Image 1: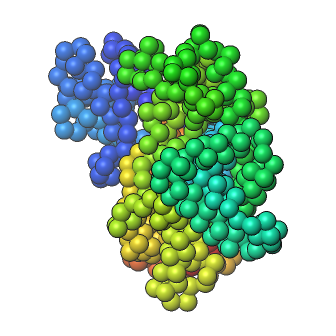
Image 2: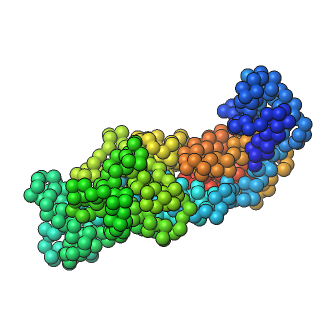
Image 3: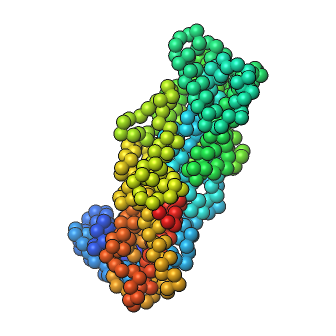
Length: 564
């Protein structure tokens, strides 16, 4: 890449001037008229050696000029000591030619080649709704999986689901009240009806549990029976409810374009986690009031004590996670394990990681945890505890319906894809960790900062190229200056690399919007198919935009329909 070449030149120039170990930055200026690259090397070096920054910058520029690199058009001092580089147009043409020839591979790198990475995300709980929080986790996890895959790693997608626990016991307690013949006919009901029943059982069980001790004790007993598989009827209903939930979740994964390689369940990891905690009692864990706890503050004063096995003898969230970490590694010996969760478990997860460091230090070192905020509607967050929940299905269906209502002639499958794109882009357009307000008008717009706008722009490039047919496409012929677009396009591999290194897809989302805006401005001010001498170049530029948008959308986990 040109960046590495320029960084090498700057390093050499500094050494020739007797200055070493300067951690300078080389980046693109905000204003492209200032050049293609800019560095603060002279300013940092001047501070180190006690010299005037502008004078030192001029000396560095003189040394850089001696390189006589024809790809570097000019090197100039700017402001108090910045150094700006302008790159020859032929370099951009060469990069764009590479984009066209590489096609689906454009933007990829091999920085993680040979690495094995497992990404765990979405993690819905059977017996509960797939809600909008799961959409956030899914969008981030799927995009990170694609970005890391594009950096050469072998990526496995994993989903971890809470199929045991108090929430399940609450639902099963209500299910036990139904007559036998109800369960005989239940499996034959349409999925939508079975889900409605399951939701009502969860709500009824939750209200019962919260109504007082009379219901709490039997529900705790049911919870234990589920873990121990000691009651045939309880186990049967648990299995039936779980099967229904997983069937529903699979329809959501298909809609969102996610295919998991591994599904892990708390019913499996809980037994393993309990064993790990028990084996390390007296070494890492301690008994306290009948429970087994981890005093994390002994190892890190910023942390706190958490229960790993309850006084009822059941493993908690943290103990199950220990079992999961070990099971994951046995299933797929990873170099990195990435876990995406909501930020409400941040404190728990830090305690868990400290426990892992004491028991599985090598696995703790391989684990990366990233959290997200809440996805809210302008009306606010709703609660799944009472069943009054913003479900993923309802949000996606509403998005699809609004697109069909507002966009004349749009096909249903396109509206469905655009609805998913709207939600995913809304999540991915900003750095992770913050809450997001999903505004339907802005997010569904085909003319602004949105997922559908990116899809629409890609479809526009496809339409132009389709009309062009077999007309020649070339970047080595006559062409005019088309402003920022060519220079912006060649940055794609850099953006992908940064997103991979920082685990932040928002760099790609924001970059694609810039590309789409520049192309639509170019499209609006230029007749592409005019038969002029620069037509092959304009078509090549259009093709490079299309490839960049399609590949970029894939990195965001968003489809790129050829027609909108």
